[in-house]
Image (cartoon, rainbow, N blue to C red):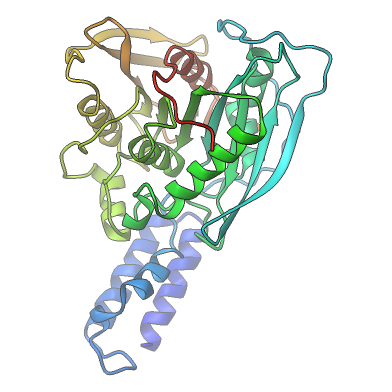
Length: 382
């Protein structure tokens, strides 16, 4: 390999690991430019390198932003009460915060599973929560306060942990084609993990949901596309639409200004979207494009004109909420535009990274939206 290319790529990796995305991109561009003018060690032009080699290089790069270090959070975190009806009243049984390891198609993934205290014995909802780059399950649980909501309202929360082997900054690889398909890569792995929890726990298959932040939000959108039979509704916070990128450079472009393609075709479950209009990491146009693609994936009876309302959280954050209802009057898509907000989970706790405690409470609003959308024809438990 060209020594200059190796040196610049090492520099890019170091810069991305510290969150310096702009300088990392420049290093990548210099590396690609320098390599394009030389020959590889095999005597081939460098841009003819194998797809697997290019993929390996891309997997070492961050497609997100810097996060502060957060120590492992307690198994249960506190949050303000929300106006969401309880699903199953808890008894005196102890809740569980389970460490697990799951293998599928020669890949393995660690996870945390929060199981609230036993209730009436009826099957309960399950929420798959996908963290952002550099985060981990404990951090994400602490920041979103989703375990507290789960304890109060009786649902399970599953937090898979992206491996550093799969992506050096623990990003879900939403920007690569092999991870945008039903039977391949991370969508297949995450769906199989979800099915395994359905089989092992008392879960209602009609009430299985997925949500994520940033790279996790992009992967949540992909899972809604690839597995609409499994997930009854989807939550995308500060994420990107399915198909926004096919490699690292197109990912950086989409993050900077949104993607140039139209809405992705195909069925999409009901979707709720949160995005700050001051997000300088993932351009807010991506939130608009997630909404457009979700609307395109709804039944033809979906009404195109939204109902719009403005409000202010109790902590002073202003927002605009657009609700797109079906012809039957049910909410099909919601879009929350958070005015002045950056790249962070709205209403989250400062116990976790990438959070904006000024609200509104994205976790509570997602839960409300999810529970209003049980699956009409859920997948069978495998």
